[in-house]
Image (tube, rainbow, N blue to C red; front, side, top):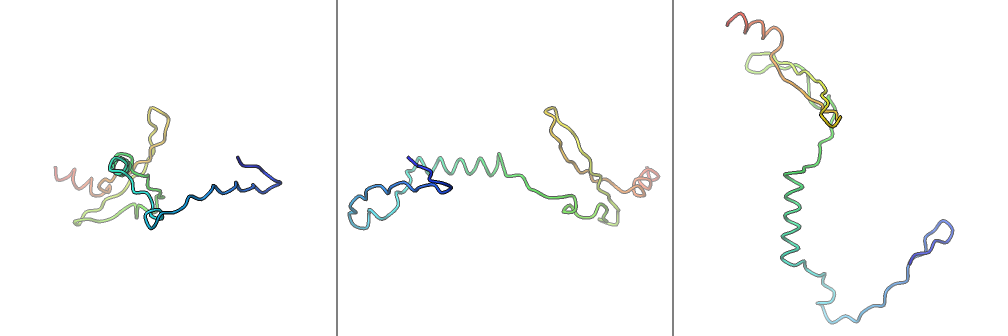
Amino acid sequence: MFYRSGAQAATPPAPPRQPTQGAAASEPKRPSYWEQANAGYNELVNAIIRPPRAKYTARHLGPSEFSFASRRFRRRDFNLTNERGMKIVCSHWEPAAAERRAAQVRS
């Protein structure tokens, strides 16, 4: 049980120390195979199924226009709202206006 004394919290009394029996008592307890497998599974789930969200701003995406293979492309950023009312920020890369007109003329 912890008691508060003024603004400081009192520390609990230390538990009685058990006598040690050689080096084995000072080594930490190794997890069982089941605990290791469970921890590995949880890490896999968190890494693949529920990866942490990356935090970035629009400027981290780079320039909104660029050239690739002698063609110009531009990025159009927009927001969508899903069924739960959550905002989804999207980017769509498309040929620049001049490139689209040239493609239409060639068709």
